[in-house]
Length: 354
Image (cartoon, rainbow, N blue to C red):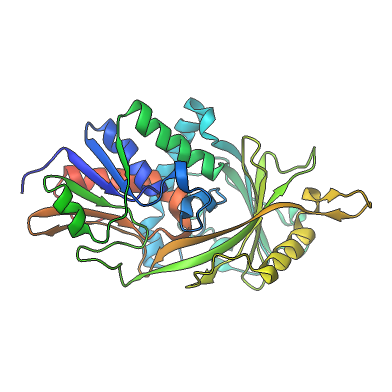
């Protein structure tokens, strides 16, 4: 099989854009095919990358798949350090991250593998610094970013500086892509894994997430930190700044296999209730003297997850080379640059799997 310097990436979410960015640096001629683009789709509920928080919150590995995949987040962490310094317009901002676990969890309490490795300024918090009802806490340096701004930044860099061809076009199978570009390597970044003959990876599924975009009061303490509570019932309550005047994200929910893009009023009430208990500093005082969250919008997105973890591997069909890179669930931003590096490694070597 002859190795080509022409690459076609299917999908223009954060994974596809990151792969394109690094492939161009390696000298490849890159074309992106996608039905959804950052410049035209940031309000489309199916364009998941625009609805992310987004921040990096590490967690201890609970399975072999998570243990295998977590190093991707550390490679991405290093790349975000570089990009934040070089491109402030990207919206990447490094802040203090806080984890508060409201039930006993040995994986956190033992600082198990996947949690603290390679993080800057990681510190377990002493008991006297923990909020009420919190059993474990830690802090570390991490990043936040404004998701719609960031993916549009990547798209502009690819179009204007790297001369990447970006085509908004929906395809029904990878076979169709290879018929259009028979001499190219295809990189499959379609989230839930578009297949050669159509359809999607049977191991893929969607996780519906709902968050609130709120306008913060002046002087609130969260401009330089992101805080996540895992509640005793396993649900989450978190706050994430969207830099460059993007407001704050108050989240969040996880609902398996729901594709309802309409805001759920009961979930909104729950998010507000949990936020009032944990982040009252983000509430404003209205004209009647009542404290409340100033909600600017309700975000609904669908995280593309996969049983068994992410798929990053080569598949050869009828002498055509396909490199799959999908199934990141809620960790697309966190794993994006590490995944892109693995894609390049697969393309440039004889490796067939992650």
